[in-house]
Image 1: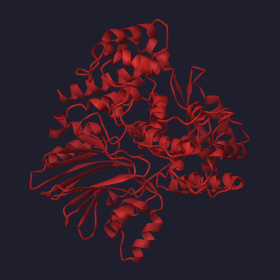
Image 2: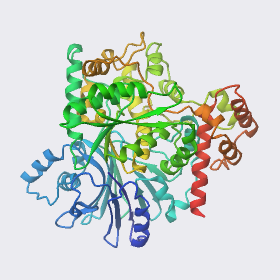
Image 3: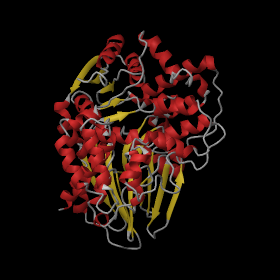
Length: 588
């Protein structure tokens, strides 16, 4: 896993200096502590990369990597799990390989097949390929948005990077104004969905897309993966469990292949325990598993996680999170997120990533299980059990919005409840089949937010996280099964096949989903109280945004005095203030 950055300039404009780019790339050392490299043709493009060595740790595999004839250069962040098969195909076409790194296979595939190669990749990636002959830069992001990639467009060219903060430290980045619509989206959702970012001329590549830039300023865009709305439900009910288990087993076998130690996150729910159970079965040695314990019984899953660990025979490591961790974890969170994102689950994810990195370099995780197999039962069952609304985008957005509408309109009276034309799921119109629309919305609208949190928290500790549920084979199997096999809205139960497989492998009947989280309401009243009050007086980032501060102060007062729980709303504003204030201090 790595961090990438670079630029292309148009029509002969000058590049930034190599010294500047070396400094910028080295700021991403947490994403790639093993090596750093910057390449340039001195005329049109710069590509930089920090590397976390997972496959072929030798110096020959350092990045950026060039083709033997010097025409193509690749900066690459990710892993392609079927690179061995692609390598065999490319060898038949005459390609020779100097490393065991999948990056060299990615380079050869793109050189041989162009952007059509992206459809062949089963893995996680964000990449930049420069064609020195055509003087063209191509950027691309994986099918699910597991790895981030940002682009800043300016008059003289484009600058790209794995981290939004990195782009803010360039000359054009310092000049970018805040996008008020993006700010409004953040206040509602706790993040800014791609392709928007907080800044007006900076975008995030959407999952499954590519963009190319030529030296004369021409820009092309395309899509290499589309999550389907209508699916061929060819797997029968009786075959669902064997098909899912076989696909997960294949995915996990692929993702266990690396030259460094591998472990697995372990919650007390369904998704990660199933990954750990299959992973332990596939390994010829004990699997290291990692979980969080907390002194708040409502959030503590450590007992359930330890039962799973005992059942699968893993070496289990438990990390305890208490109120005394709160301020330290908040400071780490602001440093790690690189952009405002208000998922409080990032705090325990940071803690478990730090503990995992002490023993392993790669960890398997359960992201994607809820979206593909209907695990968010609180909102999904309520929607599926009700008549289809006329505006499903609005209905789904309201289900994600932890900022109650009446409260939002009181605190931000000049801001529309939802920006005109904005969607969470990427769909303007819903199909007749409501359940398919809902799964599409979860995968395309909500999952990228969860993945961004995991990427930020894990890479802050130089830990590569792999997500077997988002393997292309597993996705294909999930889409081939009738959703009625997975979710029972009347009973309020989702992920039925996953539950059954897990029960058979471990003998444990799961109590259901809680996941890594924190008692944010209590922490805001307790150890974070002083910092919250300072931040809400300052509200950096919202200087020019219309706010009813009197109404906002009343919300905070009611929460602090126990007349209501508004912790999620306050957390959103706290994170925003701390991040913007950090950026201001850095610019000074």
